[in-house]
Image (cartoon, rainbow, N blue to C red; front, side, top):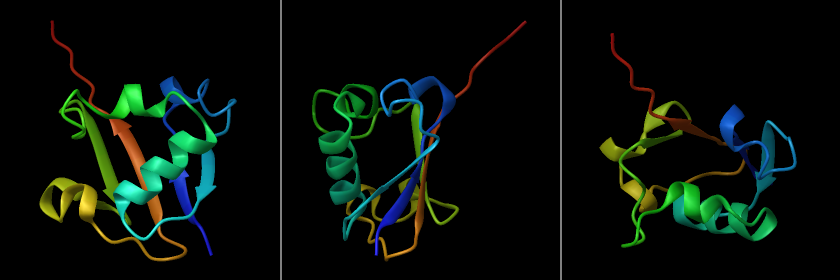
Length: 92
């Protein structure tokens, strides 16, 4: 069984307009690698030059922020949902 990845609106052109994508993977890293393999272009939007998640990208596995779990090594189970949420900043 696959993991569902929720794609934010500003990244949907990469996924061909899809709001969700199903991919396989045992860890968050595996899932994101599979996502990029299926829809090239996600790596540039998600990872910095060192291979870590950009600071302005928030990723959740089943509603838990991976920054407080095991980061890219966070395990995912079949049927889990991974949500990619770009940080929003603003001011007056």
